[in-house]
Length: 265
Ligand SMILES: C[S@@+](CC[C@H](N)C(=O)[O-])C[C@H]1O[C@@H](n2cnc3c(N)ncnc32)[C@H](O)[C@@H]1O
Image 1 (cartoon, rainbow, N blue to C red):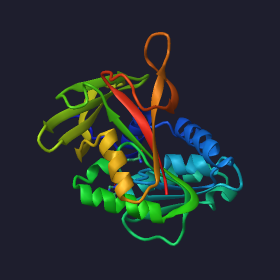
Image 2 (image 1 turned 135 degrees about the horizontal axis):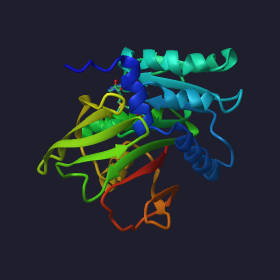
Image 3 (image 1 turned 135 degrees about the vertical axis):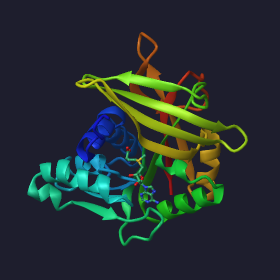
């Protein structure tokens, strides 16, 4: 039987497959600056997992601070060893991991709160999502902004296994279940490690509700956010996403897309 992935292998594979803190931070800095004419300094990364983004955030300047919140000690411990400890001592002091619930009250406010990689999809009831978004709003400064990401497209609600080949591994995004009456979905992440050709099944599993952009804007409004903006990714010459997200209202659907929504308190 194949050896189970270690904690370090599991999170290293996850991060290499689905996270890009540098481009998330670049996007947030650009959009926040357009809104408020300055850079955001205090980040709260909800559902932070390993806190990769929060650690990259504090490395921007001596004025940047970050708080990463997650319920699970396993990704946090990976993050402390592999992200926090790689920062300079002075930078580490400006980064706080919080082993806690995003629904709890905290004694600080942030310029920016993010909930990325669709983590808020775990709230299946509208009332719960309104409650979570309201909590976020209360923890934002006056010149604050909340950023979430979401995904969709013609393939998003189909029982499909998509794959992406990387240098040393292949990443699989597997939709195992979709109920069109409730929008409940079950997704798994599998990884194949090329060195031994082993496919590690169900390394991560997500029992979610698929939310769509229009509903999310309504829910954000119900949670008291005064303005929401949806962005859409531009295309390169081959028709693939070019990583440049611009404000959009009317777009053409495609097989698979990922984008951002921002909301102002
Ligand atoms: C999909 S991962 C997201 C990790 C990372 N933010 C990313 O962008 O890839 C979801 C994370 O949310 C955490 N989580 C789930 N419910 C939570 C809650 N109520 N409060 C805080 N963290 C929670 C899980 O432990 C898990 O690490």
